[in-house]
Image 1: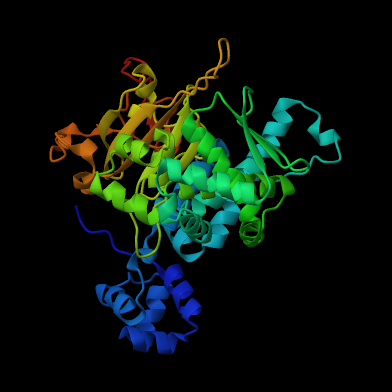
Image 2: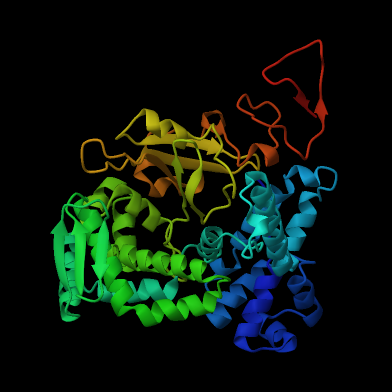
Length: 467
């Protein structure tokens, strides 16, 4: 497979601006001519190997910052938006979308936001809930979606919060027992009493009486996580608020949801401190069960944490992580790989994450290939959550964790898989509307970027052929 050229003009301009250099001075330090730098910054030329090396040697830059991850996310999100039937006769070519994502990322995000507002307006009308007759019937992004996009475009890594959590999880607080003790001690220093109570909510905090109640039905790792979340809300409030100010959310609801998300992030990062967790993951070749036992975390918490190891200068394996419900709807998503998930609807039915519900308690492995030719190894498992009492509803989810197959040697789950055999990889996609596969037997709707041929005298797996 040919090496993909790296176009990172927007990122080069961002780096130059951050360093406070003119184009002329920046070009001199990189050892290229001013016109050549100008062409690279405008994506008329790819970033050369010489420039990549100069960035590393001259400025000590982590060259993975030049990754096209954000551009790939934007391209994926625009393609999904353009799969809406309203664009059926006006779909730009993929090359144009890539140019927009690289050269005008703010415009791309504005387009995605505009389409999301359009969808929400249609949903309001379709629901017949009289929303248009109320004073608050303004078109605005869903707070939940706005927060999800915030973490998505931060690469699911919040450096200041992550480092604060790592400092909290000092060496004497390492391990599940130590971190629980450290959390209880910190809450005690704030005059807060902690009590285990037989109740449905996982956590209840009474600020007036400074009393924290945790559900005795919850698993031990969940109890520790909730303790650390409360520590974040009390001890790291200034940091969380400063991060929220930087994000500039449109509504108070989004800001409140994001604050809970940041507190959750702190809890996970304290339970699994970056340096210690990265070293342990590399040492055990990312064995989720070993990591779960070592850090006193659930399998889902471990998988999610692995997807956040994107610290500059100390990055882990770039994983994708996703959680789906029984209907196939994606409830959590993040990808540090080229694989991006659908913003709306469910995941590809050919993906092994859906089969995890059929084999509770077991890890399923899959070698998969996306339409762009990139190959992945995917690990899936159910993570059903009992209600804690007879008759209580059980929340059923499945998670998937994976990476490009070139990292297979770093995963214990790749052992004995025939990663060198092209025929061993199953075809998967992102969303039927933007998937280019012509013969998929699980296709639900035609791809909008292709013409269809219909033969009334012949019926195959599908009632049409994709041209």
